[in-house]
Length: 379
Image (cartoon, rainbow, N blue to C red; front, side):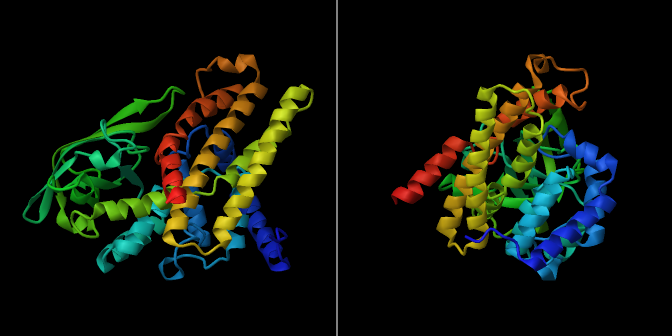
């Protein structure tokens, strides 16, 4: 594999760097550097997203006809690497990388015309309604009921671990529309507003002290039938398509930026710590190569599913390992949580470490991903 960028690609990298030098203000860079969670909160996240939208770079991976850039795979890699190294605020993938590809693939013409421009411009912020109190990795057991009543569904039940629901105005949600037959056969994929009567959002404060997660309760919530994506009772097909996008995130650009910051602080470290950092560097290089192979290869659906599960396991476990190194480097006093976890230094190291404990659980636990990998390979 030729890992050298072409002159045209290096020119594009210079363009991205010039854009970041002008538009990534100290406010944005500080927020990105001190973000201990999965991604930055509103309103700052929306402000940065709209800066990208003004440039035409908010949804570069979308098809050109819907606002994408038409970039080559190498340009996508460069863009992600430069954002991470510059400490650009990490943005929620719920709107741009999760529900949008679903709408593009399964939505009606009316749904595409209504939702996609609003997502591209940052006018809508989406929450994901998947997990429930008794349905996490076993997602097909979900129970949130959606009973048809004329031109609406009436929703009753709850969702949990709903990231940034308190910032969102929309939700894409898996609901139970049929209880006969196999569990997967009675699920539908539904889009709706989060300000509908009967919806209550309650905070879940994590061990780090952050409020990223929520419980969402539905009591006789009336959702228009026009919000269904795909066919009624065939939402499992849509859900699997979305999860493949969620799990195939490129982990290496952010991890490379984190590891480089750690390496810059190793003066006076013990030999044992330097060896741990070198080991992480080797593992990260292997992940980078694997992700490049995925990006530059044409794969059928089975292989794409396999590689997305491999990437999810490798990326999340390396993410946890690197944050462990950051915590160790911060020193034993880093175990004392400050009053404001968003402060720089040890507070960020601790909060990041605690938040990243969930990385091997969200988007399907790594144990389940290993089962998927084994089944595909052994088959």
